[in-house]
Image (cartoon, rainbow, N blue to C red; front, top):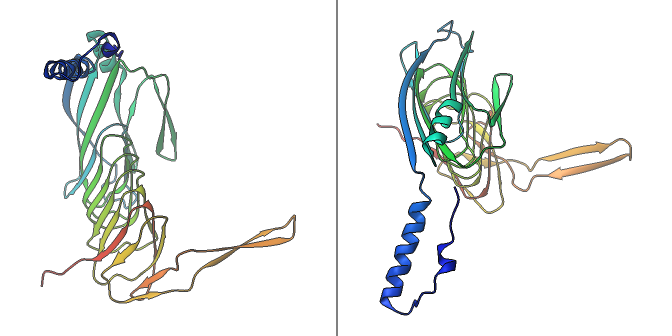
Length: 309
């Protein structure tokens, strides 16, 4: 949208009450002029199915751009998809163009269901069922948002993400693997199991488990906090990296392991260099899978789930 610098053409006496009122009125007018003139909202429902409902490899992939991704596990066989689309545009022509250009796509193939967005300015790359976006030549004549809510069989594996103006939420899942990522927003996992990769850049990461992950898992943010709640019987080795944060835990059976030293040999120069971890790993319980926590500006909280008895 094009902004008009009305203030540059006015000479106001800001020391007077009338001048202040006039200035506030002009700022309000400018703000109002920046609001899109046309808008469109739509909610739609779709369904999808895995070919083999009992396959442990069944995986749901969702890759959003602007908006929420909310996953809820349930006991049914269908993947029930609801998406709320919102488009805001400068003009009616821009709005109509946006409604035609932006596509919500669902692909089904054997043991995977893939959901993603496409448009002339969205260059989609698919590799090994993963989608990456490259947005080019997108004008600012319209804006869009998709909020995606999916009910999925509990034992489904997940690889879900969004980029801006939304959060990624996963609830009540029992799949073997959970990959949840964001860029500008939170990642929230509740009552899940499975090997986990939960990453964002600007936002918090939180997770709670009814059964601890059976394999190596990672949690990462640059600007935010990480809070993970595990069952009381947790046994794992913890690695922690931070520049401006600390790690806290209320588990009692914790021991510090020896600092890791990794070597790297340069065969051409005949030299070997060593990298020493700044933070020594921790062992909770008897140890086991490695859970890595990495944060730049924020703290990490590893908590034990309290029993109801």
